Amino acid sequence: MPVPVPSFCRLLSSLLLALLLKLTGISGEEFQVNQPESLLSAEAGDVITLVCNMPALSPAGPVLWIKETGLERKLIYSFNGNQFPRISQVVSPKANQTDYSIRISNVSPEDTGTYYCVKLIIAFPNMEYVSGPGTYVSVNGTTDEMFKVQQPEMSQTVSTGETLILSCSIPDSFPKGPVLWFKGTGRKRKLIYNFKGGLFPRVKKIGNTAKAGNTDFSIRISEISLADAGIYFCVKFKEGKPDIEYQSGRGTQVFVTGTSNNSAPDTPDRHLLTVRGTKLRKNLL
Image 1 (cartoon, rainbow, N blue to C red):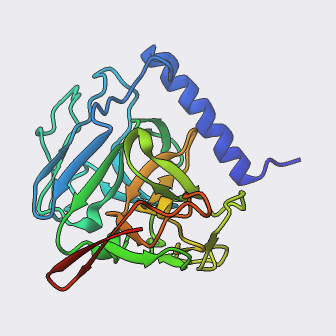
Image 2 (cartoon, one colour):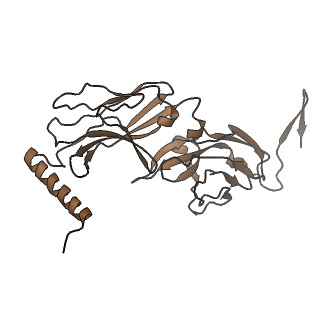
Image 3 (cartoon, rainbow, N blue to C red):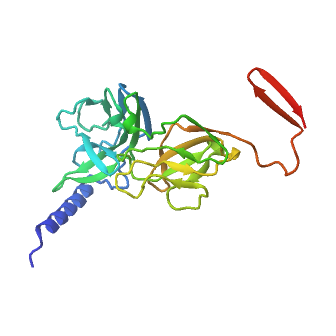
């Protein structure tokens, strides 16, 4: 029975790959693509350098730079002489080249994403051999509002017993991963909602997060008390093992006015201070 052409091509590619590796004496475990920087931050208009190095002794095949944003993978540079606007290689091509770093000029928030330096091996078609671990590039600037986690309110004031709405919108172009709401920062940071149906008394989502393309991750907190005062952050995570924090909103500071319910009943405060205009009156009870 004849072997189907696609299966035959895959078999031929595998055999060719095995033969080339045997001739070069290099295994996939030994060959590594080095991207030393896992995270790179820049401002709009900056020039950034993405570093990539690999052994001089390697199987024949091209090197590519790939940008990944969410589920989209896009070729941004190929070292084959083609023109890629704003992008150039740092080192001139030469025999036994080891440096495949590139330079990107005039970056903008649209350049935010994860960049991979990838070694391919000649086959039918060329096959990905080894990829670097990736460099995540974050670009800040005045034009990048559509590429940010948006928390429009810097502060809100509510009274005890009222309902508080915390707004948050997240671009649907961001990588796959959960969105969480936190109160506080550092060691005091506390999860208050995760959109996964956990038990979060008084907190409800507003947007339809199950809808494709949803960007609304606002929440509603009911029966506000003085203990709810603080700063709240809407945070986007990138899916992984474990999930990695991808980007946070700037935070919304919540002020709560009203009286505390912690006083024991029938036990009045000793002193009551009231301010009316410029006159301060002290009433002893």
